[in-house]
Amino acid sequence: AWEIVQGLNVRINQLRSMTIASVNRRDAAIAEMTDIMNAIKSRNGDAAEAAARRHVEQAWRIAQQTLRNS
Image (cartoon, rainbow, N blue to C red; front, top):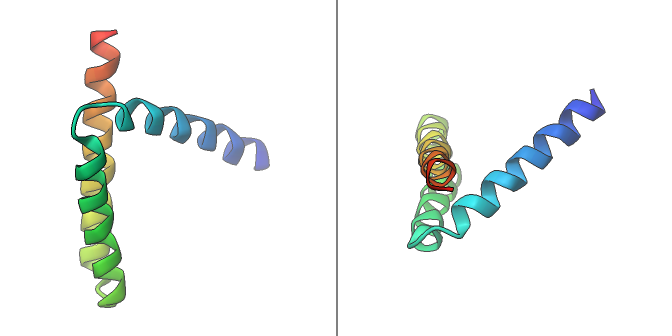
């Protein structure tokens, strides 16, 4: 199980480095994380989940574009 977790962490870090380098991603990521944190602070699990999903989906789109352009 630990090997699976380590493998996932490696992939997540690769995704992070690809998406952070894209134009305007930093500001968008901060806004997305703020939405997640605000939903958690409000104890709104549905909103937190939706915001987290939007964040991951956007990061995935950027990673796909980056891979296509490389």
